[in-house]
Length: 146
Length: 104
Image (cartoon, rainbow over all chains, first blue to last red; front, side):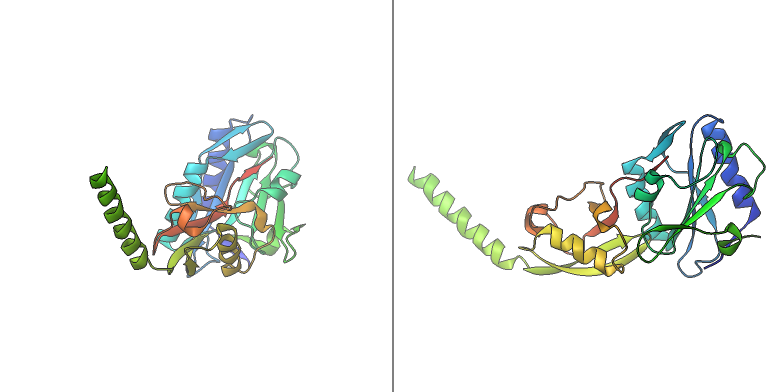
């Protein structure tokens, strides 16, 4: 699947990262779309979480309510996006604790606490393979900014 | 004492009748990433089997050990009890989701 991501949602994602992370904490955002048209990303969700310079953790009660919200609205999470302090890569924690475990699910990591230019420059994209392993994949292969 | 005993006996019969009326099998709704699917469970079924079946409903995604069942109120359901002991009721919505989501 190649997802269409409106530039305004990408921009809003960076806004969340910069405002919440303040250039000194990691942060996460979730890109969702309707099950009727999964390719078209329609929303960016900023989850309730705790974070520091080295990681973040989602609030369990928030996740429960969000899971119900997705079911009530016929939407699903397609891409999890989070920041790193420096270089973008997929850590062992990122590998082990994603929000969705389904093959084809994407995880995008933005370097430098998202304080750089809005876009995928030096970003790292990983995808869950059928055997459960995370594999690096080019952003252009799975994400199209519209 | 006799009166209490009679009351106790009456109550027991009442419970037996309630138990007879209780459906042995019923459907619950499993929710994963915005998709809702029905699963039939039995009262005496262990919850770890229910969890396995719930995971299988969604194509058995990799690393199923990271997933758990939660009630709408956010209570994580233990795996070492039966459906009855977990308090499940017909048509209840159960959330299949990771216990922990984090990154670093």
